[in-house]
Image (cartoon, rainbow, N blue to C red; front, side, top):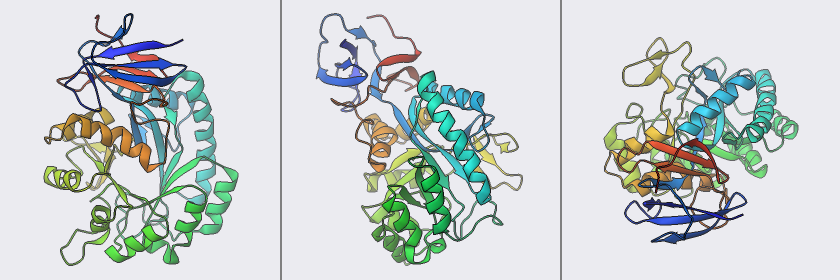
Length: 371
């Protein structure tokens, strides 16, 4: 049965004009502007946007996705829903090779449970490591290793359609055999934690790499004579860089430069479980030696911070929903358009705080203003 959701703004195209969304059987079937049809559910002054998609989230609060049980996955999923995230890629960082299969078993169970419990969709795992290079950051250097195609092939065969993204360093994949293998399996290759040259990064793109993990972090410096991975991320249109917009990982000036220069740049949280880490006043999660180990950022806050840089709200929403969907080749979410999943978030027009969230057209968070 079709029902209509109306609001003071639909984003995109932007916050200024009222509009409405017709939903049937979990999908958007029509989008209109101006006055809504009679009987529409009124979201009042809210700005309706597509649900956010987080491509890199390691954990939430005390829940680490590498070891979480069913209750932890549910709590983390609920917390993300409340921040507007309707789909995500749980991220597993560098670990011994024999620890990945049990972790992926838990992901498979959590993915099925998320569908039963009306929680954000688990799009697939993001393996950030262990095939990293000269900029390991908080990853344990004793576990970083060259790419192992035989291990990857076995893992992907054992867990079909479970691994969605693999972050690796080009210098850990000489000849790009692992990059090509992953691309053949339909896994999105992200370049990161690397001191690769500009030329090497572009050669990795030739081999099939399409993402760059947390631009400016975990990579060599952008230099005018040696632009490196950061320069390739900004220059090569095949590469979609992601940004951690917590205002800790990247200076505001660098955020603005990237957003203004490159259209296909997306937002990620790189959120981590904070147990055992030192959370500083700026919200950074750090190891004892001060190394940034991730963030405490929510995707809603990332959008708010991005708009605070004088970026239009529709651009920030695109970076949190549309561009991540495009980066994974998803054609059923990330936009407010016919035939898309009715995964939606209602934002306060002033603060951009999350007021309500829908999954497949069903309200799961918050309440609406009266018409």
